[in-house]
Image 1 (cartoon, rainbow, N blue to C red):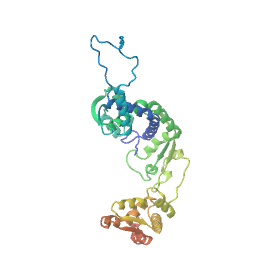
Image 2: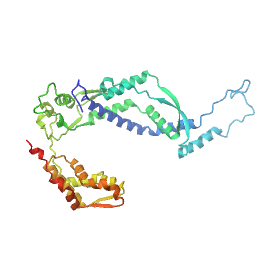
Image 3: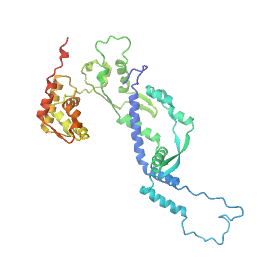
Length: 379
């Protein structure tokens, strides 16, 4: 995903900027929940004004008495409420009951001016070239407004977003986000083995996607200051975790400086049959439930006996041991091979109940297990 600084590709510092963006979204959501009640009250008042605009006071004709002139025939206190106030209360009750959601109202909407140049910069990985360009352009160019007819439900969402923009203090959200990133941030570097040096590399020019990336990661892991559009972020106390399979490379293939930045090294064990059984039975969206739901759309009821799941787990462990160990991803390959015929004939078997037993698993997958990868023996 990343390349060395100065080449086409994403800068390694962008991972800190992305972490800051996530923290800002979390802080903004917290502030949104804090001011949600106040924002909804503002929206309800605005909706009442749209449904029942306040009546404008007409200018008194020439020679007529004003409110400040003495009026002997007028009572001292008006005990009856004006009809506009009674109508407003009636509409407020209907609005609270949800009876006016489909009524159309006309409101003024401000259009957002998205600059195409900024989108090109973002797509090419040059976010740092214009951290505040969008804010600068939005302040320079005046906002365009247009009148549009929308339903009350749509108007409520539009007004709610505008109310949140006014009530949420973005400077406070940015301060909270930067504090959390610096003191509680975690960066997980997956597939770290893919940037390990190649033993027999004899290409021309710098290896910008491997050793160059390692050297760019060094100061970030050690502790440096990254400039974001929300402020400076120090990485001294951010927790960095790196993981990789290291099938074709070794940890020693990384540059020594980077190895020293990760002092704690943990080697993970391979998955066993009991682990595969837990993955198939205890996870919320296991492959068993996914295939059952998929075949249920065709009217086919699929069920697995407990012995069948144990047999599936044993086969996955065996295949991982005899060939490439790809972990839990092996389950998807084995399940697809097991249910391939059932999946294709499901439209013709509507209303049937199919039970997968251990015998069915062993018969269906016997050929797949017996096949050996002969390429490893080819010189």
